[in-house]
Length: 344
Image 1: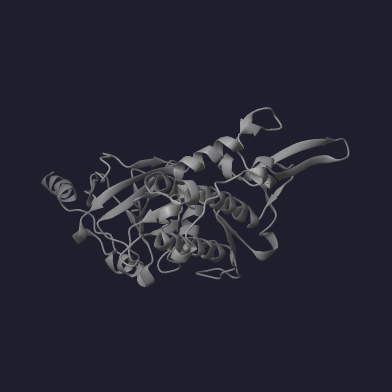
Image 2: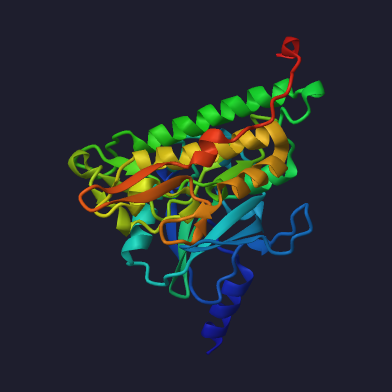
């Protein structure tokens, strides 16, 4: 009885230490019920008590972590991230052996450590109360919030932000490089042949902004591999579009085609949509981006109004459907302003 009492109190008073494995590999921990975890819920600079984002595959919460209770610092310092906070994703499905959860974990491990600076890195995983959790570096906010908080670098033609535009150009280049890295064939761990990745859910909410020790304006990172997958060369472009649980706004046309098949080009379409919104923000801040979203709204083939980036029309028996980029996008008129080119 006394031994049990001692063990329970030891769990409550001794926080779990999280370490990294060889080559900064994320380790897994089975946390016993009652074990003290080394963090507290954080209050960020915007007065938010609980920074929680509910996604399709889980819930993400930001915590302040005790610096003496983890070994993440060497990796975070190499990436240029700060080590005071972590983000913990708790998966909705409690079964660790669930295929979706395992697939997400495998994809995260493919790109973690020092694999690529603009792809989210997995720090550790743990199970608690039969629920699987992932630990990540903590971002300040996602691209959507970044657009709302920061003005675009060319909003004011009289004082164009040259330094900000150069930084943004570099970040867009790095995001494209991150996507190429996900897509290109890789052979890691126990792979017998090269595997080609696909993210499957590129959108502003899955592009995170981090404060950085290396870049004073911060860095953008691709995150959330909840529906990502990797395939061999012969199967990389034959994934049924209907099987992908996508975000409606940024989905590619092949999702709506009968027997349509998903390839890595799906991510290219989604990122193109994001960059089009980015262009609106650059020229007219978030207000212009919101107006652009309103312009996109039009009836879908079912009659329901949507803000997707393509139109689909029935051409008749024997001819099938025709899909194309929405006419509003082709005809949209963005603000034309005169900039002092000598400042660039």
